[in-house]
Length: 249
Image (cartoon, rainbow, N blue to C red; front, side, top):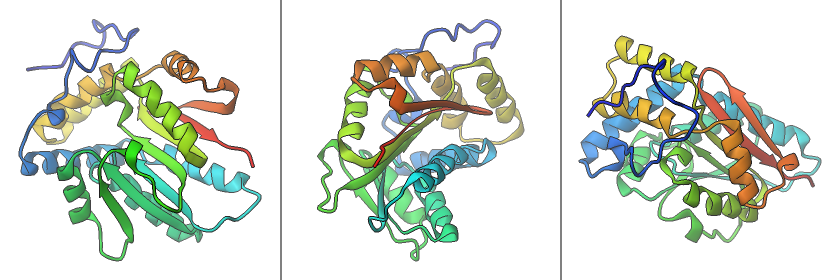
């Protein structure tokens, strides 16, 4: 089933419903299929500079901190292949920032993929389970998520926003796609240049259609009773629109 629609013909003014426009990677598949798909999503992330927004936000959070409370416990919800946390690990090591890193995912095959891809000297904890039920004794300082929100309905995103706000002591950051013609066209070009897994070739276009504009995030955050003046909603070209919250000390 093709998801490709000409960018000139496509109406991006409204977010596509994840239930009516599903992604292949969310359907039952073998571990080998999912692992290959996740590896290629990591390739796309590298090619589109997709780690940069999260790392820039973490640098901002560290820069605004006036106190040291020990290692930051950073939890990546929907960690998938684990590439975001591995990037955070390298970023923190280069800057001398003490971190404890945990990745959590509902899919046990995603956790298996993350474990297999992570060097033994990177002390990252991988958890199979529901983030809402994850309550470590030391608490959580920062929650991050990357390419998770467009898999959720609006009704599912609102309680997730509330959970992050209630759970993360220092702040939270959502790194997701921007629903505009530029990312849609750019991904179409990329699929002609790179031999991505078939899931990625189709799901990349679907993901953009299911992603967000700034007004979507303002509406969703308002519905979650979050004060918009406390949030940052920023575009990071070529393809990301991110929402962040740094809690003042």
